[in-house]
Length: 418
Ligand code: AMP
Ligand code: MG
Image 1 (cartoon, protein in one colour):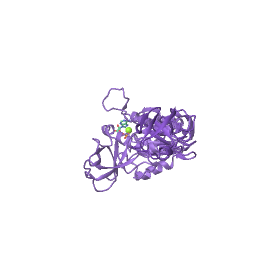
Image 2: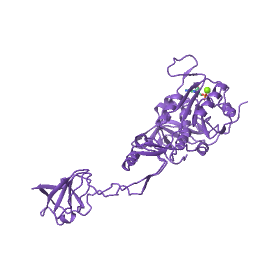
Image 3: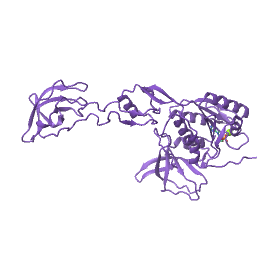
Image 4: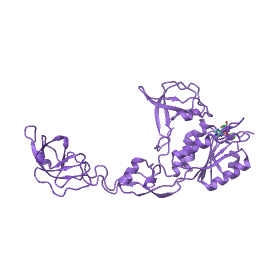
């Protein structure tokens, strides 16, 4: 008898997954290895940035008061008493109508409170003249204007990107406390599966989900543990799932979650005593996506259909894995775009369409990336976003505004809002 499954809304499925996510701990890593990791401590300014008043230009450091009354007719003259290159400091305090030649990034010398840009001066003798008065503080990059000592600049739970690394380096974080990366296992199931280097034979196809999901993990900086492809054999698959669970923090399987005669994942979950969080989601593709939990470990049963597998990973596995790493913005970023094509068929379930977004004169436009059934592989290759069409009786017409979820975005967002 075919088992009856109760479909749940996508947002509810995401919530059930995220309710079962546990951060797996932290570790200290050298700064150069932190790209793509999740901060496990806030970045607090250890000192002011900049740490001293400095020059934003190449020019001359002067006392503003000495420039009072300068004009085209009454140019004011300064004598240069020395030069300060970046990384050096001026030895002397400035006196009346004295100036230091100063380079970008150099510390402002004592008594100086203004920098005159090189272009604003005319050379004269061992000095220069200027034709305008300067206010104190003009052209100074002030100590602490970027960050004040003690200020919390970035919260724990944030993804570390190149800008974050610049900030960490600024404060001398040679080691950074980050969330541990989970060990993620991948197992592809299906008697029809060949490996990438095999010749096609009747009835068989190459395993594209395994390499795709590996790459989806790699995008998150995670090297997976691959359990290869298995034939649909209940005992053998149960044994390998059991082994994988012992060796990994989270297991992704592809295929075998439908209700066909050889779809063994439901039976495997039952044999192992895993608690199924859901086995039917109100979405297309990927309605059969199943997520179970055993001894605190999540098992993602992704559909074998490539587009469904891809979408299931992005919607459920990615945020869960980021959550395990302590990430607080694990969801795909969302934008609004205008549909570039009609989608008149009503959807009983929310539809996620592999698509391309681009900026046209009339604003952001999104068009489906070609053949778009759940078994499509070509449109995953072409797409850079997923169009979200909520379920309902009405169709969607060209020009209507829709939500799109961005694929491959480095930084996610805090809330799942669809
Ligand atoms: P299943 O989810 O096992 O019912 O598979 C659904 C469809 O996806 C079938 O047409 C399978 O042949 C295909 N499929 C299953 N696994 C893979 C895979 N790893 N790579 C490409 N296609 C797959
Ligand atoms: Mg199968």
